[in-house]
Image (cartoon, rainbow, N blue to C red):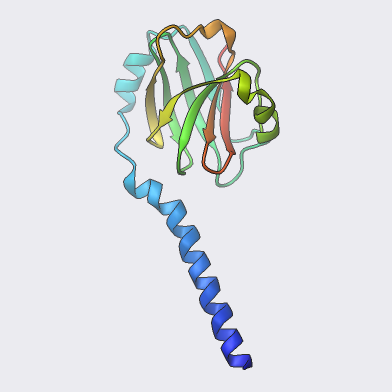
Length: 156
């Protein structure tokens, strides 16, 4: 009986580890190639605002982080940098700078979901027509599936 319980527990642990590893690796394996830094920088030159994604924000950790330069313009929001891999990343414009989940959840209803982020190195996300960039001052990367803060950058 003891041996059967030990076997069941060890198999369950391996199964859970494999499932968790799959959740982490699947976005990496299925992510499209990101745009080159040169292409993103060329698009970013037209943007009037810039900010910096940093790893040291309160809501960022070993598995949830972003780093690099974000440029915000009327046509596109770009990143020359990297994001930790993960599923279902969304890019938001937020009216106040936030640096963790709790702060963002208080402002999420006042924030604008700009679009999806499908790459983990560099990105270009189109800004929907008619967005008033002056209503916001922060760009935020959010994992919608797990309600997880990734990173944020104040751009003005």
